[in-house]
Length: 305
Image (cartoon, rainbow, N blue to C red; front, side, top):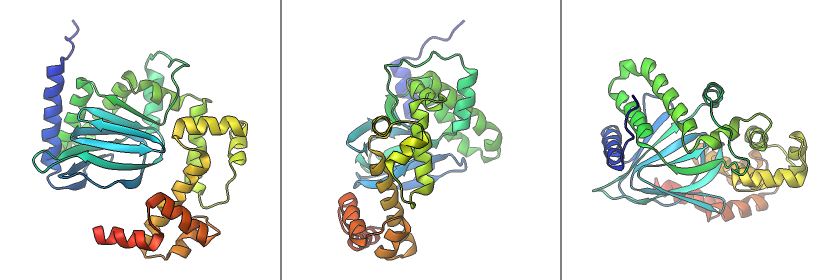
């Protein structure tokens, strides 16, 4: 006999349990790396300023409070019980929009493995996504209580470190299966569909991430996946929320920022290392993205640290 469906009240209880679990292990503000390599926990006791970063393949869950993520011109606001699935490496701007010391923002990020997605999708008898359902590399949705319950068990497993190697993979496999069976399923299926435009764009983005310091032409990228330049740009923008050259530019500028911040490299050298030939163009595009020229921006970040 099938179990009765979970009610909204059940969902609130599960979310409360997840908040307690995250709060137990993320006791202080910041990002908490856990004994489960794919899982990080996050806590903020106040709203934060927008931060540029790269979101990788994974699912982020807001447990309490609210968060905003901007991808190009598209904005995602998600609150407790909602998840943001990212299926490709995407440059975003993100900040916490609701948090206080009495009720801090709590969230988690679980990195996903594309091989596990492919294997699970092949074993499941899933209906094919509608052709009318466009593939997006980032999607927002509510999580059903059953999936939240599995995530809660994964976080609570941190209290039993000896059991993590045996049990964590099983829980992560269940999460993948439930994601595929849920509202994020069509996006994950389109990612792994062989020969689909989404997969071709994903291949191009992976190549750009590995070769962003090299001279790149959008037409060459289109030819590499056997698309016309106009069709390629259309599919790339539909998936990533920006053009191929905008994506390349953000990869370069974010890497240059990290080089200057973490290795003390000067702006001119950082610009050359990430593929710029003109120092003035590098400084101009850097200021346009981060709101200040390189030296002033790095000084501001170090003073805020």
